Image (cartoon, rainbow, N blue to C red; front, side, top):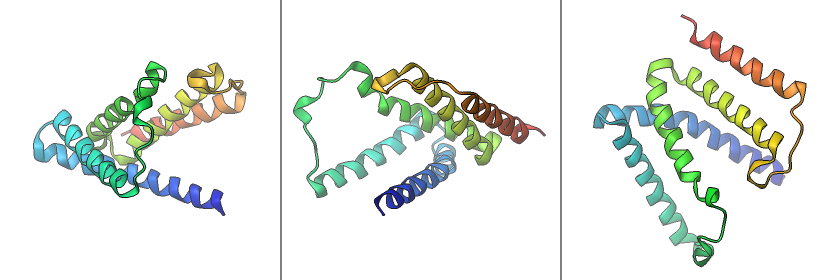
Length: 147
């Protein structure tokens, strides 16, 4: 049951990410600034998380900040690039093409992470099936971008 619940949670999160792009794109139109609207989006997200931490009391071990490798602190930067990229892309190529491109990028980078064992992940071989899956995503994106 836990596996199903977490899969459902991930599905809901994925759906919200798809909704986030057009929501942020509308905010960009209101503010007339890609970076400004991305900053507002992150500020609201930070506020939501601060309230969640305050209500749950789960702040973690703040004293251990700085003890990890340098790259362990870049998740927010990755999110900032993602939010900005999708709020710029969705109005121009559509939400479907934007998210096929997002998934293509996710799967391609995930395959590299698996192949080379980056970020402390156990290395896994790059199989023909993985390459074919990435190729099919690329074909999907090319079909969606045809006019």
